[in-house]
Amino acid sequence: MKNKIKKSTAGYAELLRSLKEQIRAAQIRASLSVNREMLAVYWDIGRMIEQRQKSEGWGSAVIPRLSRDICNELPEVKGFSERNLKRMIRFYREYPHLLRKAPQTAAQLPDEKVPQPVAQIQADEKETASEFREAVFGLPWGHNILLMEKVKDISIRFLYMRHTISNGWSRNVLCLMIESNAHKRQGKAVTNFDKLLPSPQSDLALQTLKDPYIFDFLTLDKPFREKELETGLIMHLEKFLLELGSGFAFVGRQHHLDIGEEDFYIDLLFYHLKLRCFVVIELKRGTFKPGYAGQMNFYLNVVDDKLKHETDNPTIGLILCQDKNTTVAEYALRGFSKPIGISEYELTRALPEELKSALPTIEEIEAELGREGK
Image (cartoon, rainbow, N blue to C red; front, side, top):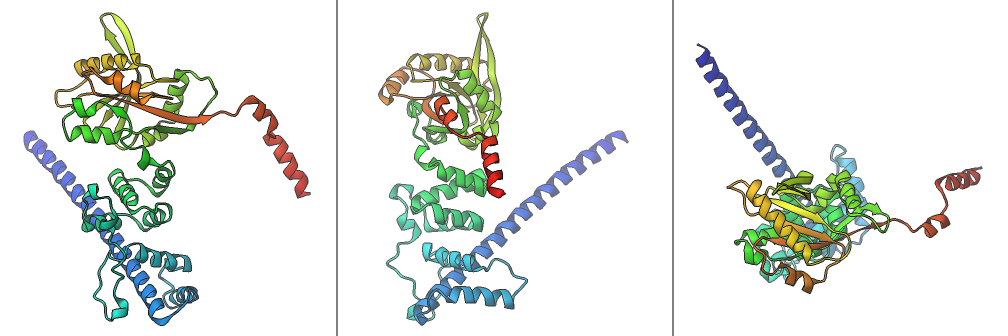
């Protein structure tokens, strides 16, 4: 009887798990469907207004009138402010071939001189127009607006679209990535991945690393110690992980290695969920020195021997320094058997004491504001 109950309980748990997965999947599909339909409506509204303005010779004054009338006629419908209608027109202008409509008249034909999105993407991307369309429809309206306003180059915009979808970036995170020029820093580290990692893992690993890393959430007095940098990064772990990129899971700080009755400590140890490997990060103050590569190679040998599971990929090392000579870094990596990357990092400097003394204190500012208010 007990065995039957156990089997029944196990069967119920499995049923419950399956039902939850189905419900979540259905919710996601419904959400994506609603978003896609809304974007299609916005695009079509932008198309109709744009084409009617051209054919009727209407000026911009028609936009506020349309907004007022829509709000009066359909008070329960939101999202048709004057500002949003202008965004819909821009949405259509940016992607005139996103949805092809059968034109009723010659005046409604799309301007074929405007290249399709895929034609504007760099040739080596080799992405299709349908993939671009799916990327646009895979993002919320707010994300699309942000990209249109902040990223002019369509190929770079497409890059941010894909990263946003794959990493699940919020609108604020996407804005931070754009403002920090993440696209310029991706895959720029000096590495030996192409020689030591199989394809496509070598390409994925290279694209995972940046150069430089921007730690603008830290403010350190100069000179600072490596321990202070390490402590600051751990104190702001969420922002640190965001800058590192998607897939990094924090394992530990000053991870202890007991080798030959000697103690060694890895600055930061991570596991990368997409690369399926450990990532060792060593923080260095100042200029890169060739000896850092030897130290990292040693750590990677130990981690591969003592921590790496047989199903894991080879451990990757990342040396972060304030300044590197690319030529020196490339020579330093020659001959090593472990995959290592070398990148720079940038952080916010504390104000010099002489400048601090020249600035008013908070108390002085408050006192001044109090006098002005009287």
